[in-house]
Length: 384
Image 1 (cartoon, rainbow, N blue to C red):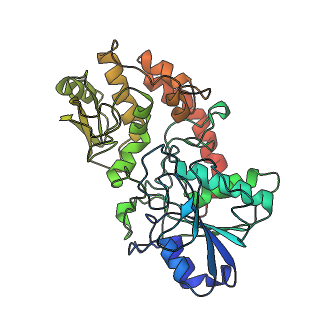
Image 2: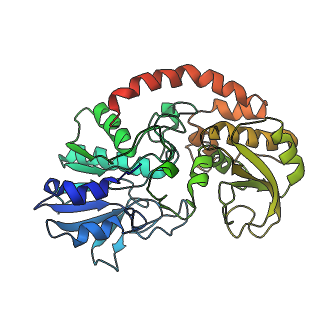
């Protein structure tokens, strides 16, 4: 399949959208075209418009800040432009940031999972521009996990946060452009929104079946298999399990110092889940949870990306640890008034209770009706 990213379509066919304008860009240097040329560079080097402002998501403009690390606004050493941080004091653009901007261009990578904060940053930008009457152009990208398979629950309003900004499933089956199209429709005063579609992508196709590369847009976004597993294993962030950060396989490795790798792998295998195999492993994280400590757990290997159910896989793995080590396993204690981080990721507080009661499978049956309704309602916002 000969597919193209939206930025490539803009540069080859839709120059007219931005000609003569002063441009603000919401992106980072890790976001590139198929030849790994940063979108920021491509837009700055064009002569048809003038880039005046950069706005950066989580991990900063150069994409190397750690997860959750606030980043200050700065002058970009490469371009000399002011680079405002949208992951620090502000998580949405202010009027001051957009003073010299005629059009705001958004090119952010999404990996098909609700928890990814690029979704929240993009939605915040859309809302800010709607209030200011500023046009937005979104350079869309295929959903690497395909655009038809959905899994999980619909986010409940009390649990809205930057890791759950929109009422969509965990594995959402949409492109970022479609999510913003959906959100724009819900605004009292919609934004002047233009979406430059990715060309040549069929929504039932996984990224490896296209000619496009997997873009590693943040420090722990390492490969396609990681993105697929992340839909489930990211939930481990809300527990005292290591999600593999500080190893070479984040979100593919899950474990803790209190676990027995072989026992975890043996019990997890009894679920006989499709498309995945758990290998017992030992590992020592270099940062984050259990820095420098020997941990044991499993590394998940995707054997069939078309049949794996990543949310179910990650959730049943977490439940396996909780069942085997009830005296050691814990959910992360609330750090603020926002409540339990696991609940923010899950988009509900019922899932945490189900894990402790060893009935995670009930979560999927109880979510099925809402997911079916979402599937019917979201079709009108499809772009592909």
